[in-house]
Image 1 (cartoon, rainbow, N blue to C red):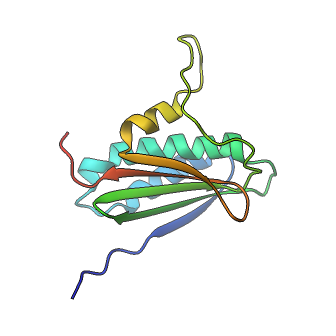
Image 2 (tube, one colour):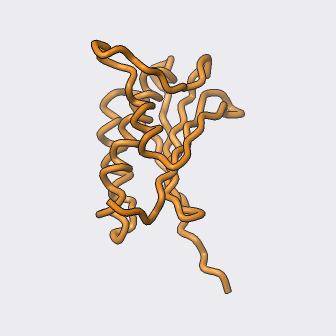
Image 3 (cartoon, helix red, strand yellow):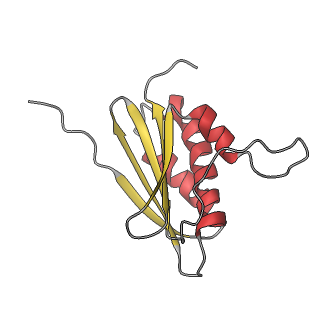
Length: 138
């Protein structure tokens, strides 16, 4: 009989800057204890960058939320961050100048994640999904 995979963990946070830290702590605590030592730093950084982007670029109304889903499959830990915004712009990696104070978040995501993609949601907004290998050398 095949092993039943762990169920995805799902959260909703208000689309506000204060939710970035809340989301980061929730996701790290949800990691299985055996995976925390090798994944917690990278999951924490991915969560911070993706939630901050969703709050900054996806929220338009005071009651908007940011949704997170964490699950493991195919040898990866997957994180999906979704906003409920208008989805006017697909997130893309940019190369900001040396003096730029913002614009490096997706560069970090691109370097850390084994794979990532942005997709429009059927109900409006955008989802960004990123995967980290479950087992990798430090």
